[in-house]
Image (cartoon, rainbow, N blue to C red; front, side):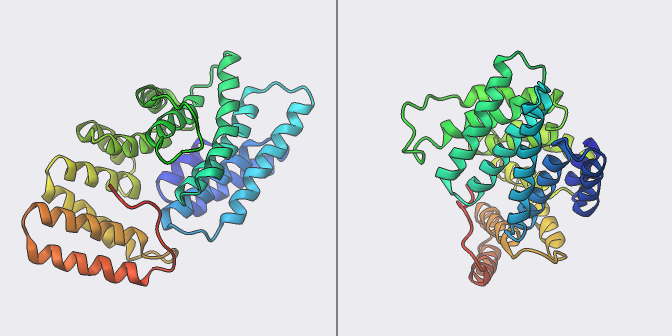
Length: 294
């Protein structure tokens, strides 16, 4: 399973899926393989910003829950089984949030998080439960204004961040995911300086990673290190040109941020060129992207 996660962050999705399916073949009644295959499919869709495999993703999430609940019905109190069931619901929530389907995102997210909280109350030693709870706690608080249907939402942003920092260091299956989550969160908090050590550590392991290169490029922009930011965004654009799936979403985002960098450097001609590229690519898009960049 750890091999599957490693391959996901190496962006070798084909081999990652093969590894997950080996787990399914060897342990067809256990939920782990189905859960990890759902992660691979979701990661593939996030990488290419594509909905192409949505049905498969939900199928493997549902199989994770089905297999896990069947084991629990047999009086199996395996905490990892409970974790995989909770994680499948949580990943559904994350997927829905990607497209700003807030009501379904909350519903699935809460189903998963409530199970994680139950595990914590049971005294579970699984560090990874902090990934789900920490992410939920932070974004529930940060998106308070959008979640108008949730009464009395207290501010748990700092508690969420602390949980994710624990997982980043000690998690079993969610170290990398916690690092990626922290980058998004710290960008949202404008705590740019804290992002660089995280991205540098992850880029030592995954130097070609889209997630960590873009995360670092955004943080460098926030720190006023515009030339370094420009270099990384251009690097990602070069890589994106080889994509055979998805649309122009990631290239659009890179052009948008290049335009921001050129604006800060008072490079008017370059900014106008990148703005035109951004608008041209946006016009070519098949669907509207979710909430735009900060």
